[in-house]
Amino acid sequence: MSEPQKFDPATATPFLTSRGHPGWLGMRYSQHGDDWVELELPWREDLLGEEGQHVLASGPILSLMDMASGLAIWKAMDKFEAIATLDLRVDYVRPAREGAAVFGRSQCYRITRSAAFVRGLAHDGDADDPVAHIQAVFMKIGGGPKRELPNG
Amino acid sequence: MADNPDIGVLTPYARSLGIELAEWEDGIPVMQVAFVEAVEGRPEHYHGGATGGLLETAGYAALRAELAKRERAAVLKPINITVQYLSAGKSQASFAKGRVTKLGRRSANLTVEAWQDDRSRPIATAVMNVLMGEPEG
Image (cartoon, rainbow over all chains, first blue to last red; front, side):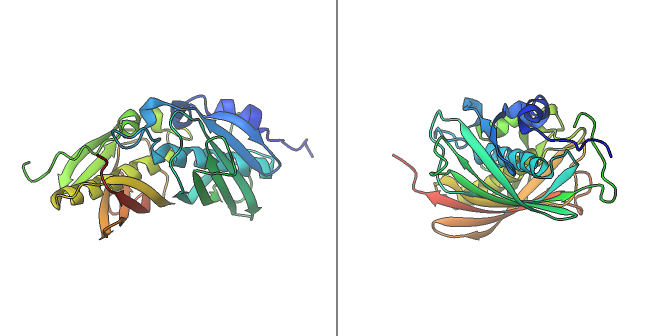
């Protein structure tokens, strides 16, 4: 038996957000627990939604929560394994404040052999006053014997 | 085309992500995004968030087109979205088109599909509820 591979969201996040869509959004690690991870999406003028309103678009929150959910699942499994989002629901309960960074916190509350279930929230500074709530299911891909991704 | 109003479908977020109007189809805009680094998740595949952003943009575009047709002005605010990911988005252009399933006085229900080379096999679908507020001023 080799040493179990530990997954550390604090060191994995900079790697995972260095390029591609997460890199474009500029997501950053914020904090984590045993089965949850929080990421930060810094305020950016070019991520606004409707013209004339200084409100963050809803799309970036979807991306933030998708990413935080993936990390929460890897943290809960304590390893990096290929997963794919099956479905993701976001309830936007209020607009984020202008100029505020948005934090996405997701918790993996159940993992089965093939699926992982998460719930979470997005807030702009006070987690007791969220801007959005989310629920999602991810599928492990590859099935069977676990496949490790490089640089996991 | 004279029938198709200029509805300003692209938010700063959508423009920044590289989403564009592909064409009008039956009075509804079809949106597209090229496969560029800004949409990439795991190598050579779309990030779920980028696919979701395309679906949302196409949903809003379909609603704006419908409102413009009825000469209704409204400030659109998201209530919720549920995205179903059906298959991995590969390294090629993606398209999305929405449908206004129900247009109420205060809210609208939209269904959206995204596809790549084979339209009969969508890569993702979404259901959205949007609040339509009174225009300010």
